[in-house]
Length: 436
Image 1 (cartoon, one colour):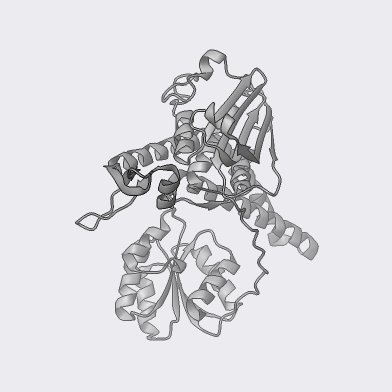
Image 2: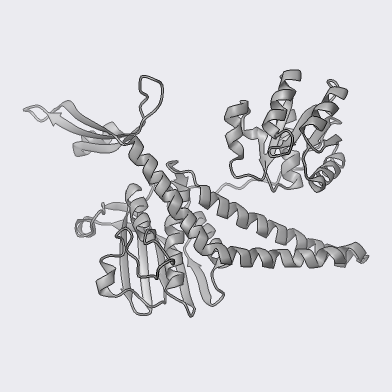
């Protein structure tokens, strides 16, 4: 790809990740210039490489700090929505204890289930956005990005703001870092919210755009070609012309002390630029529009439709469940026993080791929590593998850094189960580990 671009344009600029003598990897900004002979044929390449490893580390730290600032501005909205989710659960649970009508029981169970899923989704979105995974560029469907940000905004913004989305189904795919692009759209949404203290209209849209040579030549940072354009439009107070020229400057803010650092829009500009895109802003009183242009892929992502798989059943294997939460042990045991497994439970690591030793060779797999008193999940797995090196283990955790344990334990990624999980997810994971 780099060589093709070099031959086509005569130069190439990009990042490389070479290994140095000690085996570690560095991040290098490479600038290649094609040198031609007297006949115009390619002769050699002038390459200049600059080590930007420390710069990238600082950028990553800065982006994480700014993400946490954004989460802080949404905190009251998140708390409000979680309280609204917990309310029907707390009210429905006592009714279920005494309700005998099967139709009514089913109705209240649906309320509890739906509320629990909503709560889990909010926590997942907040954790994903807060911790991020900077630098990972993957093929993305813009509609999914827009929909996820709209869900967060819809759950956390005041009800006085009318939120709507606008797109068609033929949007091209883009290549980018999903966490950083979430950050771009959410920052723009937060600014729009703050511009409408009395309420108003917020519209999130995405469309395919072809940027021609003329438009690219008069727009700083723009390149001609196929793009996907995200647009965030509000009906707020607008941005005065004297302020508009400064909004992307670091630490520039029109908000009062304690209400913002002025890093939001400068972060947006930096992320968009790093993705090869550019920004345009239009503003007047009652209408402000931020447009984010990102290079599009030639072919869109095909939607995959998967048939719903039947619930995988056990074959009489004995499973050891280790968790310091009694409710989790009880429900997991009930689910597994109803689906063909025998189950043992332990409340901590020492109790699990005692059970395992007592049932020498009789336990097919262990499902253990990562964070427990006395002995955590990692310590337990190490101890179990000393007794039986080939033992199948699944680690579950409500922590956001669960997969960090894989490097320490040498377990494949499929051996990790993030909480909260459903009965179907637990059964599927066990089937995958035991019967694959």
